[in-house]
Every structure is written in structure tokens, then in C-alpha cells.
Length: 299
Image 1 (cartoon, rainbow, N blue to C red):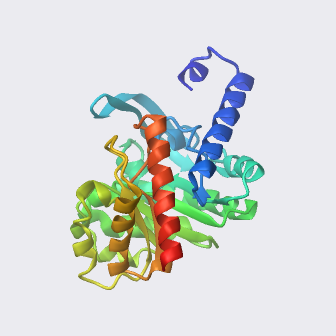
Image 2 (image 1 turned 120 degrees about the vertical axis):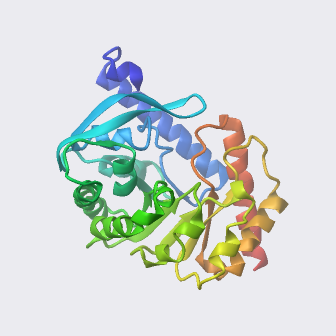
């Protein structure tokens, strides 16, 4: 991707590389037993800057460190945010051509993109978030017109500013207004006690949480109030190379049944697997899918 952005390879070669890598990832996911899949985000170098690069009004600055030796290109809002290029619609259409599985389209939420960017145009962070939410709403409606039935908004920044949860909730309301699809929101690596039960008021069908990394301690937080949404249940830890055995994952998944009925549980890894070696990521997915399959047969 960097060689392409630096003009070292042609658009034709880059597109072939994208498509080949997506086909490989999808085949791996199918072999692992994944029921609902995406394309591995092969076109996205990073979850924030990718969208900023395709939305009018952003400018990309230099790289900043996230953690360890991982960096991302930090965007800045320098003008009015406007919907220009399609963000994920063509990706969805290509994926629909190469798999018969159900598809979940992930898109980074407006709150997180703004929180991880510099605001050099709008009077307030709130104004910037709502402007971006309106842009994303146009994309989500386009996805539905293209046939998408399941959309996930990735908003990991929400727990880091619990005092702004109303802004985050409003942004999701704006982004999803008139979007006729099954909607989820993914939140990870934060203190959920600071945003629960308020997050139950978000206008989505599913709340998806990272849970395995903290040994499922956060489940006790969710027991304090009735869990009224479906749950995306992070049941394998993506920050360790240890491959959890099937029986262990089954035990992890069963913890979700303390919150909701089994048919309202969607099992998944805590978060993205991109920092793991591919063979480790595959085995984690395979064992997770085997665990889910065995539990379905037992229930």
C-alpha cells in the first residue's frame, strides 16, 4: 500500500494485489468455519486514516505511535467534511461476488475518527463528530442499497471519554438514521463501567465487546442491568499468540448465557487479528468456530 501511495507501483497492479489478498483471506475464513465474514480489511492500512483519506475535508499528517512499534498516519480536519468517494460499497460488492457467506461490513465510527484526528476547522469536537456522522450516514444508506444487511460501526474511542457518551450516542443516531440493516457497534479496551448502562440506549441491534483479554471480568458490569441488545462476545484474546483450545473457548462462550439467550450471542475474537502471525490467527478462528458449532449442537 505504501509503495502505491508513493507512486512506485501502478493502480492496476495494486488492485490485483488487493483482490488476490482478499480472495486468500476469504478462503481462509471459510476454511476456518466463519459464518459471517469481511475481507480482512486488506485495503485499509489503518482504521482511521483510511476513511480520512477518502472523505473530503481531511488532511493526513505524519505518523504517530499508537503502542509499541505500531504507528498510524494522523488525520486533521481542515475543511468542511463532505461525502465524496464511496468508502466501502465497492468492497462489499466485490466480496459479494466471491463468497456465499453472510457479510458484515465494518466501518469506523464518527466519534472515533474525530477523536483520533486533529480538529482544525470546526468550532467544537461535537460539531465535527456530527458532521462526520452525516457523511457516514450517506455511506451506510449506499451500502444498504447495494445489498448489505449487517453493518458494524467500530468505535473503540468511546470508553476513553465517558463524559462525552451523549455525543457518541447522538453520532450513532445520525449515522444510522434511515439505515435499514442489522446494526452493531464494536467497543474495546476501555472501562465499560463508565459507559454502561448508557450504551444500551444506542440505536443499534448489537453491542460487541472485547472480553477475553480481561478474563471476562467485565461480565459482572453487564449483569447490573438487563442486557437488552444482542451481544457480540469477544471470546478469544487477540493480544496473545496462545491458541485457546476448543473446550476452553466453549467455556468462555457459555459465560455470555448469563447475560442473554444463546440465540442472541454472536461470537468473535476480541478485536482485529492483524498483529498475529497468520497461522496463529487461523487456528484461533478455527477453534472459535468449532467451539460455536459444538455448542449449537449441544443446545
